[in-house]
Length: 242
Image (cartoon, rainbow, N blue to C red; front, side):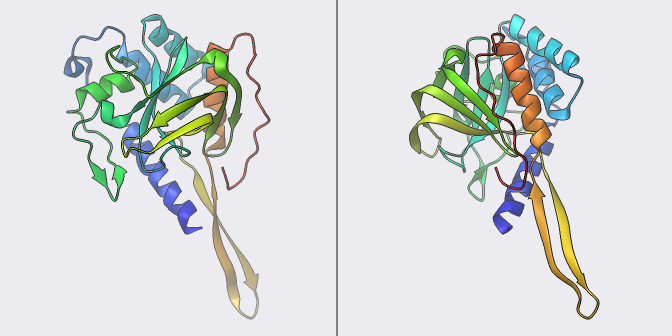
């Protein structure tokens, strides 16, 4: 339970940080795409804005040649490193946080959220990423055979294996990417038993993940990038675990 409460706390902090106001367009220089649309597209899904409005922002960002990006944790690669996952019309592109942030500050071994002075990071988070920055992995949408939504994560199951390395030099070759796209936070429900002689006993907290958020992300991705409905979508299960 302590590990689950820690996870909820970390995700809640990331949710607050990730929703912070990004630097203005002037602060990140003249973009080759529209980072403002990229930020809005992501945050509309995080906050549950009407799907039609959210999808309009996604199309605006994509039509301008950009992507929609999230900071992310890839648990099967390195749970103590952060990545950036960018979704465009061709593929999912995965980058290390350290490719955009220098120096990469950490607290208790976990990367700290970059401040407004890290302009290259904020432009990347807006979906405007230079072609000179080589992603750790490129996964064409044609290689995604299944997309499963859980409480805390999405599972991208692939037809081919990809190798991904973290900023801490952890390297794994996978045919399934278990990813938490930062932004959705869960809640803790407290339960107890009442005994008339002993009072409250067996007091415990049960953590529930942001399952509706995972489903919103999944719905948006398949709506925009899988018009033929080729990707398999298993039924979502909800509870206290993944």
